[in-house]
Length: 113
Length: 112
Image (cartoon, rainbow over all chains, first blue to last red; front, side, top):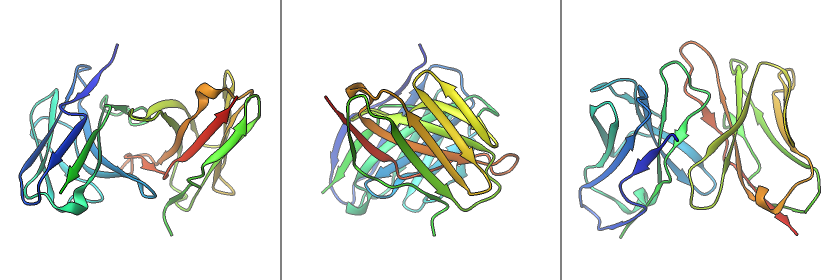
């Protein structure tokens, strides 16, 4: 059974804090993605990675960075959290070259106060 | 204009109804058309995808693509309360434009 897990389901942080969101997949997938999902705006791509230590900016990378030191793990970092980063964060993974089916984690609901 | 437009709903129907969910798009380079279902407090999961134009059927679900009109649809026959979820369309091109672009999602409520 394929699985993408995210470190927290709910997270509350304060403005200015450094926040780490972790994602782990057990499918040996090459590609991993971070999205945020907001009402009325849908899913927006923040960053993706097609290999270890490789990363590409998505549509809304400002205020975020990522790290992929191991194939199975992709981390999203908010260097200095702000209230407008309150959102649902979704991680996904796919096999190399197979972008039609992304496997998503359950999401992390982040609230920044 | 967004690349992919999808009415957020909610769409409320009685059990057993035929449901039609739709997306329109502006980028003629899109070649692959996906439908994801997302239950509350869960991540999206792929329902089905089609390549180029035409229909594809899977059980009670039919995906339809009209590239000339830049319009895609997902039909659900004999809808069930368990179909209540948000349905997201996702479209992508080939080659360099391989990352899908998602619609906002349509919330569907099927009441008994």
